[in-house]
Structure formats: structure tokens, C-alpha cells
Image (tube, rainbow, N blue to C red; front, side):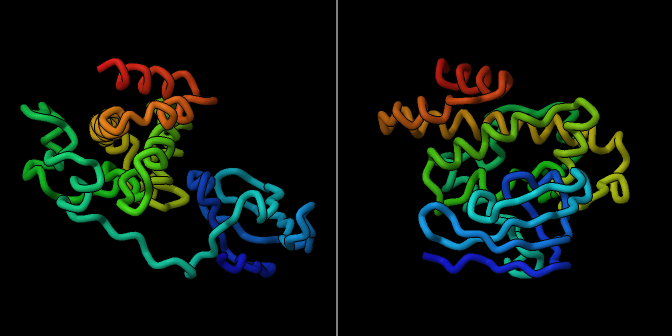
Length: 220
């Protein structure tokens, strides 16, 4: 069992399940004891994109900036292996139209459309990767949701400091294309393994966009 991170006032943190909140600063700390006797902290955190939040570290374990190694892009072969597919592009056969103009060589990594590591982590089960993938369907071209997506992809509190809104709007469809293909690959893996319990579990409590995408992938 890993030792919980102990935070101090002034620490810079992120919420791993809500990366679109951006960086947060710990403003106050209260030591608490959970019903099972374990110790945790109740933090008051000011997040760049979400404002002030009260966080119980036993429920929402935060990460402290500088503790984890920097995220690196997976090689094409590793991602393909994790997906159970030989098509590393995730887009199937055939051309991709105007989207390929964003990456004419078809092999360059780009932070705007690369799928987050947790979606294709080879050390996570297909069921875990499926749940992580379905969570990304909360993003859309709606202005606030598009900015949340860009924060997650770039790690920047203000993605517009690096990209124009037009660049974000052009990159998002490519991300969606690869994300949808990735979802289909994961569903195929679970169906081949006859793990319908995992598919049923993944379908609990989804927003409509994610439920629709999952239903479509299961039918195909």
C-alpha cells in the first residue's frame, strides 16, 4: 500500500480525475480521520480554472507538481499493442481527408490530438482503459468543454496562450476520430474475451454522448 501524499500549505497540485481544472494552490489544511481509522487531509484548494474547492485526499487523491515523472508520448508500437490493434493510427484504413493536413506525414506526435496515456496504458486492464476513454466524451466543441479538453491535452491553465481557438477547433475532430476508433478497439477486445460484465459496468452513470458511443461500439 502506497503512503498517502502529505500536502503543505502553498503546494501546487492537480486533480487527476479533473485535469481540466488546471493547477491548484493549497490554501489551508485540516488533518482528518476516516471511518476506517485511516488518516487523510481536508484541503482548501484554489484551482486556476475552477475556483476554490474543498478536497478530501482519501476520496480524491491529488498529485503534487514535481512528484510524478513528466508524461511522455508512447511509441506507435506500444500504443498499437495496448489497443490490441496493428493500426497505430486508430483511424482504420483509407484516407482521413482534411484532417491529415494537420499532420501530413501521419506519424508526428502532437499534444492536441494524442490520446492521454491513461486511455492506452498497457499496465491497465481493457476495462479500466474503457472507463477512462468514456470519461472523455464530456468534451465537445461547445466553448467551455473545448477549453477543458485543451487544458487536459496541453497541461496549460490557458491553452490560448499557445494556440488560437481556430487551431483548437481544427485539432479536436482528429482527436475525436482517434478516440472513437480507440473506443471501438477496446470494446472489441472485451467482446472477444466475453467480458460483457465489464461492458455493463462501464455503461453505468454515463452522460448521453458516452452512452451513445458505447452502444454504437457494442452493436458494431
